[in-house]
Amino acid sequence: MKIWIDADAAPTDVKEVIFRAAKRLDVETLLVANSHVSAPASATTVRSIVVREGADQADRYIVHHAAAGDLAVTADLPLAALLVEKGLYVVDPRGEEYSSTTIASRLSMRNFMDEMRGAGMITGGAAPYGPKDKKAFAATFDRLLTKAMRPNRD
Image 1 (tube, rainbow, N blue to C red):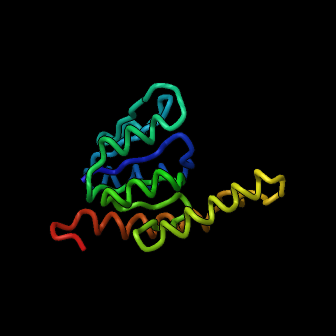
Image 2 (image 1 turned 180 degrees about the vertical axis):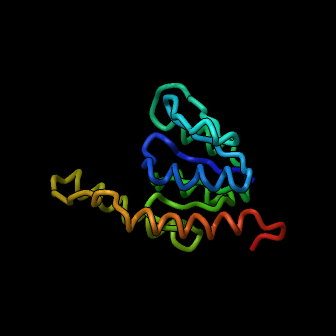
Image 3 (image 1 turned 45 degrees about the vertical axis):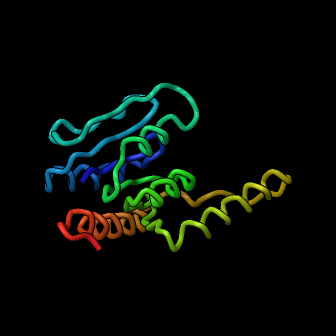
């Protein structure tokens, strides 16, 4: 079991939660991005993977190398959909779990909002990342990590 982080846009708070868990549980953790993303020297099970420049290169790398039962952290809904389909546990930095029962509606809403923005409608953006988001992420991440590490997964 590995932890995959779509690291280009992962908040520092999220990475810190993951680094602590990776160290505590001795879990291989991969930060995938278009440029080097540093991990603390004490996080010996964490490594950075740099992919070539270009749209979706990190996503493609994660989809190609991740395996069913791994855990992934991403805010990218199309990537999340591919990983859920592949059998990964997937959580976004705000603590929302993506699953086979939720991903289709999330993608539909994303596409609708893209159409609204494309039509010139102002839709606003996400609220700034804050302590509530970090707490929600930590809770969902811990729950999914526990599931992923079980020998007989649910």
